[in-house]
Length: 77
Image (tube, rainbow, N blue to C red; front, side):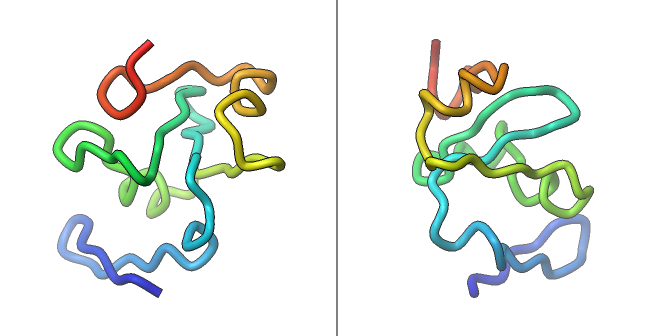
């Protein structure tokens, strides 16, 4: 588990450790964990607020099939 800071609290990405793509179900945007732009993507905040979803299979194509659009910062368009 990798600890991260969000809003002064330690957040652990327990269920994201082996995932590359994570979606924000509130905004239907998919992010690339391996290319996260920390000041723009805020993946830790998505996890902390309970809005994180993962995809099976763990691919950008699957995220798009499920209606998610690519983050402009970590994936471009």
